[in-house]
Length: 110
Image (cartoon, rainbow, N blue to C red; front, top):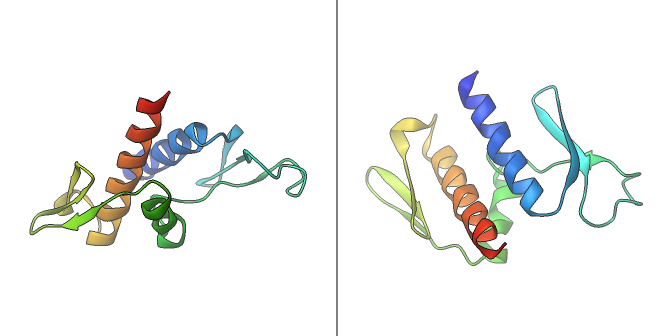
């Protein structure tokens, strides 16, 4: 349960930094008002699951120019290291490192 809470918290923080608002958790997922296109979504949409889905996380690599480097015990995303042993698999560790790197970059820019 703690891992799920951490995953939701990380996704929520990144969503806030990307301009999402009115965020609420619904059944383990986040829903909110997107930063743009709220009219097309009737003001509410599912927040991407950056921590759990490569289809959501991969575009962050390009958009924020994140360098992803796998290592023997973990993965480094532009200086943010996540250890494989802390995650269910190596992909989960990589997505977490990406989210941390992007979140840091956005917080630093504020």
